[in-house]
Length: 583
Ligand code: SER
Image 1 (spheres, rainbow, N blue to C red):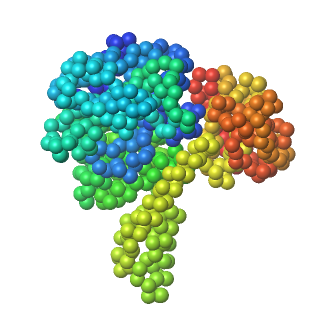
Image 2: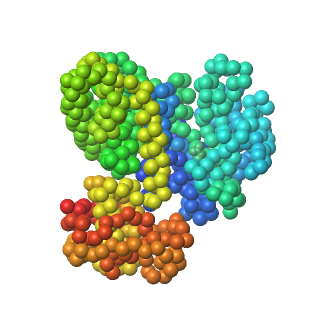
Image 3: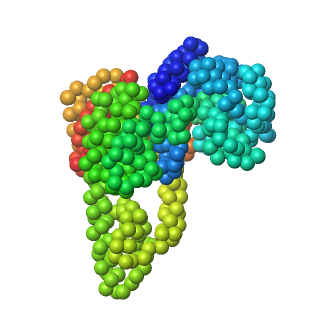
């Protein structure tokens, strides 16, 4: 069964069971600086899981585009993907365990035709926070799963939460038995030897976890997720998603044009190509920070592996087209964006090639120095510096070193590399707490400019203007705000002039700490009041702007340069988006 058929069957099945089909949220979450990408179907639904009324009712279903970035380095094996599609159905205080399990079982066995002998399930075994899930156990038995294929595990397997804090609960998971031999007598669905493949996760979300522990939510929800690529792979009797129609045309093309056979590199190219396409499709652009950096890494890694396969990089546009063609039945909007997607990827690839060339030059300098000094072993720090400063892949350094008869200790490099990775992971977690994507000089300027723009929009359009989101890269700023109509050219000009006037007045940017209530009373602007602690920092710019904000900002508006609006467009209902630059 093709992926598109699985998706259609899923949505129709749940529609017939009273669910409203809602659209996939964008991969890049609107107004949520706390995560890089949408990672699960439940993510855009959090307010509704917490009790807000959803306009489409209490039973929802959708397909959700997801990117998970923690496993990028695993891609190339037979299962990890960074981009994937999650099919999901939700009960927002409507049905609970029994009905959810009955529907899942019916869908798997009747709609997808999976023999019930192939199914095993697991339930939560209970602990101090939540009792053993007897209701799910009974529901599975009633459906027809025998005792010996119902397993009980603890929180590590059968509890689901996105991150550290949020709605959560025990889950029941469904597994497909591939028919492989058990790897040991104890082999069970929690084992990842490949015999059992997890296909669906139904979370019974009735708890909320924060730093004080668990509390009960207002309502009992169900949140389920079924990975489309994995299901397509199993139903097509394939060993990996790369053999399904979603990847196989690219995989075959690569095989035809490669001069060096390397299945891992083929998979990395096919996967990173598809993920990049989907991220660009939802507005992502490569940059040096956060989301943009993930995209940059994906494109760079893909380019490196094309090199590794000995493939001429001029074939890239065709490969992108092939990849788009293999998934455009799922995402028809890609057809219109093809040209833009190709341009973004090619441009980034070209930048990377340039970086590589610079790195090579630097390497030559180092090698020559070493030769004159008679040194034979390349310092790990040098390899690392080439990697960090020039984005120069260590395996290329290793190769060049070999050519020059120099020695590199890659184990030492790997150690340093791991430390660096852990640090940057930590760094990006920290950063997201503050909400601003980056703290480079240019980004800081843009950040201050968003405050000026917010204030200018209020003057020109009215007090109904509030910030709805912002996104900053080293190249530009994007600012979303509440306003019901397209801005006229005159309005845009006035806003631009006002911001530039404030820049030319060289206004001081000052910072104050005060209780949240006091800040609000004093009229300070703020986007997510509930996200702020009791004592907040307030940034004021002259007397034209006052906002609750974590910073950082420039000290004086004179540092900003000239502000220019590049585009004003609709973002969503009642929300407009401005893209602007400082020049
Ligand atoms: N949120 C759960 C998951 O991601 C179920 O959709 O697995």
